[in-house]
Length: 250
Image 1 (tube, helix red, strand yellow):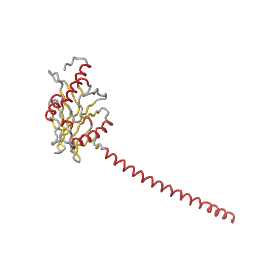
Image 2 (cartoon, helix red, strand yellow):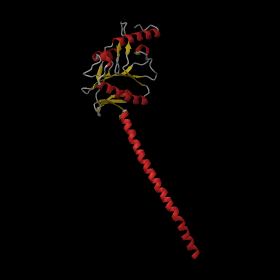
Image 3 (cartoon, helix red, strand yellow):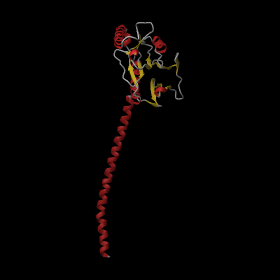
Image 4 (spheres, helix red, strand yellow):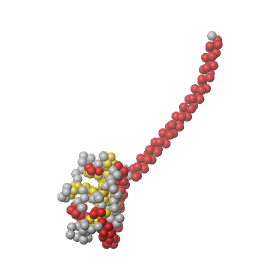
């Protein structure tokens, strides 16, 4: 794809290539194993919380990435299970993430592989991420075998990120760490585990129970105070009358 073409022509051409790619996909591409689906759900829920803290984090799901290949008319194409782009500006995404039209490149790609349902050519994808796109980080996770590897690009190739003392692999640019927890890849931001909706709901339920108990204790305390005020008010007149009678006798 010639870089000297007007932007609108590049956009039209890439949209056309995206439609051809969609029509070429085999049926198994649209079938996802339970483990892949569950991990995708966890990733999206966790990174949604990361985005609250880091607004430049943009997360995409099964989005076609298209990029120019030297000497070729057809662009390179790859669809990560999830992808993270760092940008404070919204992407120009329509039918795909077209690199010549975007201001930011993929920062992190994530793939979840089921041994029983390999929807993609993951070896081919690895080559594209490493050699053609040079994506800074790549997470590869096999839910069936609990095999997780986070790769970091050195500028020449991918190397695996070694776990720290907590057993987590760090992405310093995001203050983020990844590790396996209860059979799934989970995410820590500045050392704190990013909770899932179920975790947040349990915390909310627990907080509501505590508030309810505090409310009952407050009501009980207010009733006891009211009873005490009544006793004090009843005792005060007798005490005043007794004091007056002593004064009159004297």
